[in-house]
Length: 124
Image 1 (cartoon, helix red, strand yellow):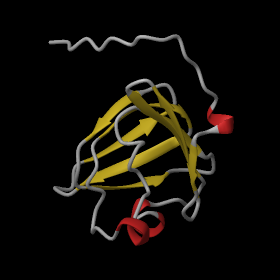
Image 2 (tube, rainbow, N blue to C red; image 1 turned 90 degrees about the horizontal axis):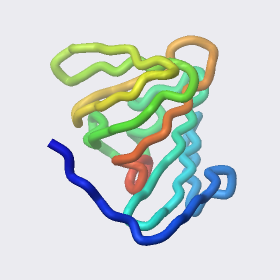
Image 3 (cartoon, rainbow, N blue to C red; image 1 turned 30 degrees about the horizontal axis):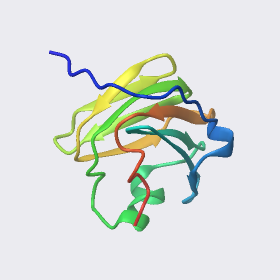
Image 4 (tube, rainbow, N blue to C red; image 1 turned 60 degrees about the vertical axis):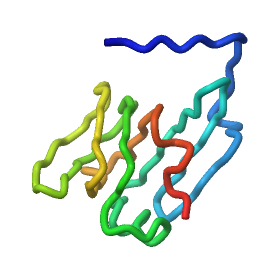
């Protein structure tokens, strides 16, 4: 099942000159707003962990957002509230439901392009 969304103008923006940038600890979220869509480039440094870097900003026990995105580089591990875990690596598209923690694995930063939660991610 597919829901088509129509856009009415040709548009492009660079995340290097984003409409909004959020920078919690070990985090850089670069947000661009296009007609009907908000897209974020999420940059997480080695040592980043949601429960240490984002939890103090949003004040929830676990991330309560749904995520849909594409991993550009690096690797993160996601642990769901029920204990299920999955690693997400460069080149993979992903969905993550609410109720999770996540952390960067290894020494390479994780960069992901998010198409669902960018408008509110890492906002108090």
